[in-house]
Image 1 (cartoon, chains in turn yellow, blue):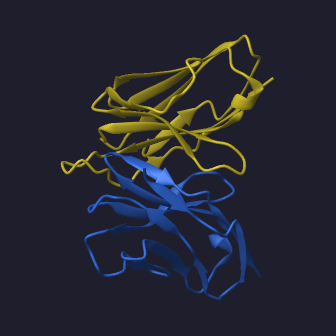
Image 2 (image 1 turned 180 degrees about the horizontal axis):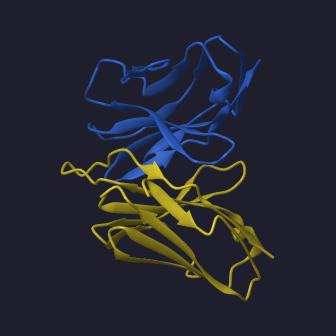
Length: 116
Length: 112
């Protein structure tokens, strides 16, 4: 399988549930990202992992917990979410450049999350 | 802080016509990258075109080209010979220091 895959594609959960989103990249990249996409808002960067270390955490509530066990896999663990957390969650990967910049990011299809 | 602004929430164009999507950005960096991404109704975000700030020549990819004005911090996307499959949301983005900053997006509708 090629590119960036995300599972599940759709998720409905109650506020007291615990669930996890999974992302897998087959591109040999060394950086992975979680974004939140809400209606009528720009993509919000949530977390960045480079070489399996978290390098960015954009003031995301602790009810979102990322995990990057290796350079190909990224998880987002969800616990005690709120209805306003309903959104499309996108995963992306890229190759971090020696200059410190980032190359093209490849995106997964996203997980549509609904919190009841 | 980096910011990216797309001032056109929605646009439409007739099939086979040309349309230009606007983007302005703000950065204090000298070396950075600019991107246009396309997100069709199926939701898979894909890269349309990429520009490196140190290159003066405007990037082109088939029917897609950019007008990169570095001094004005402007990075517009021109789509020539629009096709129905170009209907999508388009996001402008800039990057440096390892992350992308996205604009709010422009929804483009190509009409038959």
